[in-house]
Length: 423
Image (cartoon, rainbow, N blue to C red; front, side):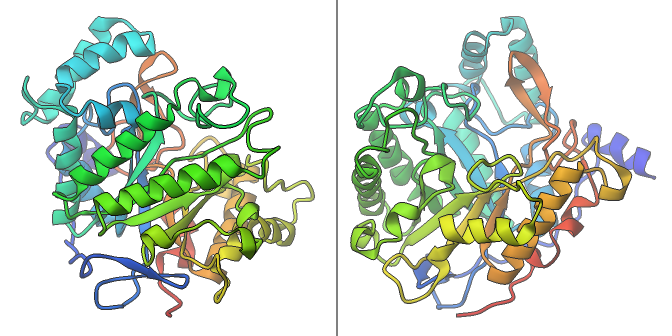
């Protein structure tokens, strides 16, 4: 039966069984540590990341499935939202035809043009609505609107400036080029004005797409060498405020999602309430975000002790859930994940390290009932690391985007699926 299911899905003859949810009354807003709907009822975001920030500038997976199949699958798994990533390159070039973007991706990613043309043709065969005049922004619109039709919300995330894989300390996307301590390794593509212009463009576009309920200002801001360390992270305070003010002024309906430094793992600089980020420009719309993986250096598990790891989560970021403080706000764990296969049987396919990490993280999240977004849906990429149709072993879906890569994984999240606390 499993073989038949896979075969039918590959042929596009199988549609996930879905129970279309009704989206909450919009717009959403924040109050204390909670995200609330327009009727002041709590909304818990249970999201999956869907990458759209790489060289082709469209959401991944269309070479294997129709966009309807993918959004149906997301809805069928009981996700309430998608963290949809995009690049500043895309934000500033919305009218690029999909065919042209795939062609340009060959040069940008260092792969043969014929390979990308073949990949584009496969995407069109699964998605015949993509025509020579279809733009990359049209594909984003289709994803957002089709998700919303199924009751699934979208958090737009500015993942990188230059459309490419993220993240490395030398990828040029980590810190503002106008910030203190400029170095090309970490900042050569992160042009501050382009970033602000891109946020404004996406916020304006989102006004016409009700499914967009939140916007992440920037993924994994990170210092390198002298950046941020000698001036109290003054650049972070200055530029994050500018961006938050701009997004809210452009689209007052969306939540404004803010991550700390060290790749969204460190908010210690706002713990001193006298130095709190000025969020008055988007009052009632503020949300914090954090990332946590088994390899995250901010939360080392040197002693293989979950209590110590959870204490680090709380000390560096989780403290923002404490109510009644200047920094109090909702917190979304906007990236976490594990390698889905190749591990040991007793860990249900995970490595021992990832199994220990995930159990500890789930315990932490269960205690706080915070919002979350798992990395990531994509079972493969159009192109990554100079390989076309590159496999993603961390992907929730298998290579062909037919179903779970590791069917045991959703059960591993346990009570994270539930809403266990209320305002």
